[in-house]
Length: 227
Length: 227
DNA sequence: TCAAAAGTGTTCCTGCTACACCCATGA
DNA sequence: TCATGGGTGTAGCAGGAACACTTTTGA
Image 1 (tube, rainbow over the protein chains, first blue to last red):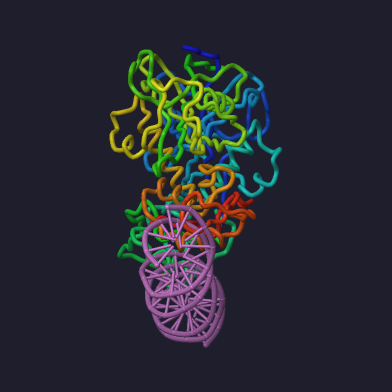
Image 2: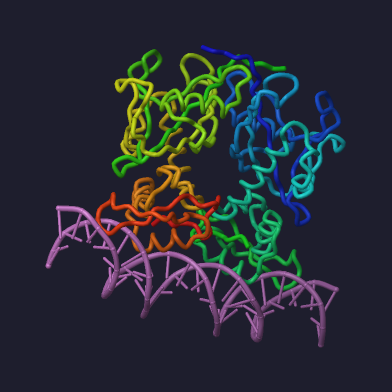
């Protein structure tokens, strides 16, 4: 067996929608290399640990979230020989979509972890450590694409949500305004996307809005369309 | 640095369309484990070798193809602790789309490498070694999805091709018949998908068909639609 | 009574499906 | 002249975009 010496790690792109904007969880590096710079959270795979298991462990460590209900998917693997100055480290990137947390970043101090608006980061390729700009770019594009044909936008929402709240997710992730009236019709008529609950809320002001839950669909027919 | 001992490999799902069917290149394993069983071609990543570089090297070794013009993309990484009985091996899977080769499998003997129809393999989860059935399944699904919104079907064709030949690709990959007349209109009217050449051919019989080249588009608007 | 958000109706237009029809070659 | 595949026209329908309009609350 050709065991070339290398480290295997996972990096996480943890996305949420806060203040009507798509935001990424970053940590500030306390040690070299890239000390003091912002980076994606991540860590090494342990012996007898599955890759997704590593990613879920990191996710819990960074957010304090019970990881069961969180959407987590693999994005891609980055293995350029010199991507880490310490030596050969191959990293499997994962994308996590989390609801806007009441407790922002539990378990870590505010100095070393924070939410940063995704557009700011995407606009500046030099702001993140390692090749994390590229990883972030591909992860965000994946998230944007997935909102089209999957009901994943609901992964950003609490268990019960209004159609407006769901629309806010789409607008934040895609960065485009959507017509509230057509959006409402489209979402409620797409089979399995959302299911009505018996209750309503006025938390968004104005006329009471009906609350919905995620439906059973895994793909949307027809898909939502970006402008 | 936590260097857990493990092997890093790439596995290749090499697809082509032959005899109007989607086919996969398999090799017969000469050594344990899974000796005598069919498996995806693959091999270990070398020191200072990029992951895609490994994949291209394997591709050339198995097919004898100059790898420059071949479409190659990463699918996913498989790292379950016991997926390889020899020890911990993490594998990065790649998808390659190649035109129907005049010389089928150059550089290897016919005993140990052959094209196998994809539907046969997909239908039987136990036929391939390791977790290769799962890898194949995800790779084929990726290829099917990509034909919808990218001009990648042309990667299965020679540099110049007729609309019918392109349609054959879609029918083989998707496993559904398409209306030749609507397909023709759709393809020729989608901006940047194909570009006409000045020449025609009668290699498919009947009225001479115009030959086309790949156009400059990277995504198709509107997308092709599966039945 | 007014502002604000929820939700419905309607019109126009694009794009897909189905299929009738004509075209250009080889046998 | 006929079989074979290439290619165009067109009618009908489904879904999206735009926007007028009604509903139900809190201030």
